[in-house]
Length: 364
Ligand SMILES: Cc1cc2nc3c(=O)[nH]c(=O)nc-3n(C[C@H](O)[C@H](O)[C@H](O)COP(=O)(O)O)c2cc1C
Image (cartoon, rainbow, N blue to C red; front, side, top):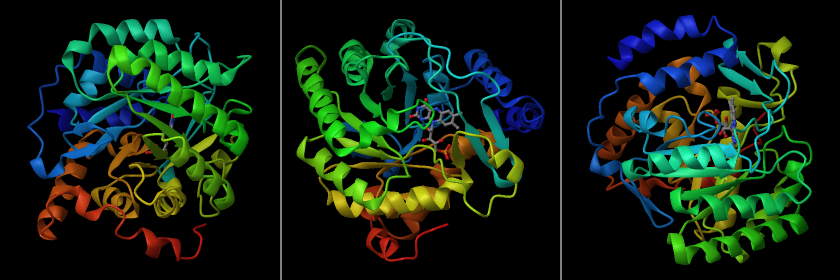
């Protein structure tokens, strides 16, 4: 049923302006009579940072920015859903147009700039569905005009702790000027100290809530050394690699759209993001788990992320081109690969290719 609807709707959606299509997709999910999916193959279960994930395939941040449809996304088969980025105060983001499809490349460029309904509205929505369960991460960010950006992250952790399964501190969006500077060693040390402190403060009233850091795939390896060293010392719970890229790989076919400012995602991001994931994995040395994101559009791509070092994956852009049936297809392919290789579970494969990947030539 989902597949039928999806096959009909996708060509129509792609005729629309991308942001209108996104709005329509969220509206459709709000009303769609989706049934609960088949229980996941037990081989796909993953335990990471104290949480039990039924399967490793998550909805990446940016699709459900305002917490409108987490339950519909679970019914599509996602093992976890990341809501946000949420900013403390409502803000409109950048002027439109700010979302572009690179059709022949199966890529997306966005410069949304943290359009957010703000913490209060999103919290109210998530509190109303909290009894439904499911792993819902809250991706938090800073308001554009904030005088103390780190305080925004702290405030959101304190506010959302009762409804968050985990937090992601998004310090890697390219669309809020200066935000990525939070990845610079001295500021990053201050940020991690203060968000980890907030995590400890909310533990008593809300239980343990892991805090992950989402980084850019554009960091230089020297910067990655610093970021990983600090994250380990400050005992963050995990990292997400990564966000969209400001790079434009030379192989892009839609050269005109590629000139739009913003972060590139989807298939053209896969090679860079996977390499950065492997580079992160070899530096983390098992101190915390990693989430692999960027250009996943098949079971093989998800498996490559796992072998590069991720125990969980997330995706967004490929849904635009491949439709929501992709989630089930990836899970089936992963379970088949585990069975074929005689593996007990995802854990057996995490990072098995990481060292070899870091020895390959740098991807374009
Ligand atoms: C339209 C759009 C909006 C996004 N918004 C956010 C966001 O608010 N916060 C965030 O951390 N990442 C955001 N992302 C990045 C995604 O979460 C993901 O890291 C990136 O798109 C790479 O995955 P993909 O290639 O599967 O799309 C956004 C991506 C897209 C395409």
